[in-house]
Amino acid sequence: MTGTAIVVGAGVGGLATAIGLRRAGWRVTVLERRTEVERYGTAFALTPAAQDALDELGVGGAVRRRAVPYRSAQIRRPDGRVLARLPLDRVEKKAGKPELLVSRPYLIDALLAGLESFGDVAVKLGEPVTEVDAVRTGHDLLVGADGIRSVVRRRCFGDASGPEPIGSVAWIGIADFESGLHGETWGRGRFFGLTPVEPGRTNWYAAVPEGTTAADLPGLFEGWHDPIPRVLTGTDPAGWLRYEMRHLHPALPSFVHGGRTALVGDAAHAMTPNLGQGACTAILDAGALTRAVVRHGRTGLAAALRDYDRERRRTAQRTAFVSRTLHRFVSTERTALRDGLARLLPG
Image (cartoon, rainbow, N blue to C red; front, side, top):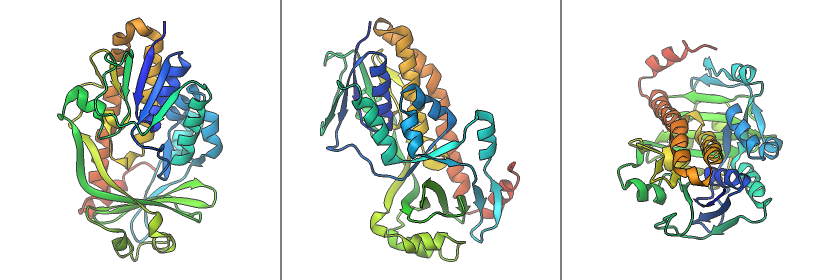
């Protein structure tokens, strides 16, 4: 016996969860407070495990057609000297496929197309969700996929956990040329990243102290190795995006509540972007929740949510902790110690 579900939030986690539940035969409604599904942003990393989860949802092929492989990346000093190499080749060898990078709009469009293919899933835009109750509204399951400031999380756990700034802001953008270098360059209290995103373009991001403006960026990275200054002087600041780096703190005691509510993605475990795992963890949450619901069915929903929590909470929270720790390590002012430790990383 299948049931009905409300998914709050039409980001990566919400759309992926809606697809999974609909594929399992559930009737699904998606509520999104914005009047349009957000397609802003630059590149998402997709691990092999996340790619497998997208395959389970039936959208893996569509995503791969717009994604590019990520096979080579280094960590450098501002003068260009290589400190370490990221083990992307070992990831590919172990999994049999490379990590991928895909533009956020392409991933969102693929998920929307997958959901629209059913023809009967309502995606209600411009729905300001203030207080949602799955029982009161006559639905069996409520999924909170409404981001770091989740209304659903607050309904379940109050204000015990919430967004916590970490003192850094990220500026991100796309350069209309392909960089020959990929990876991150670590300076004193700031770092700069370059990744592929699609043919002829390069995804970039700069993590800098809070309060840094777009006008400040070129000066902060003046004298750094090519193509970093060229990226900043050769792209239009009007197209840059500012992202305040935050994480959810303290960690939640559970991803589920009351036997009928589950949290996925940033609502459950928002993390800093240092590991590039935000989209992946949301997709893996969606897959795990769907599998648990399929195993137990509508009448066993409480048991399904307990299974989901056991499978995902410790893993996702550990990823969030490692990402936050990595940010502290990378953005330190003690560069000599950091760089020395980086050289010890296996290449």
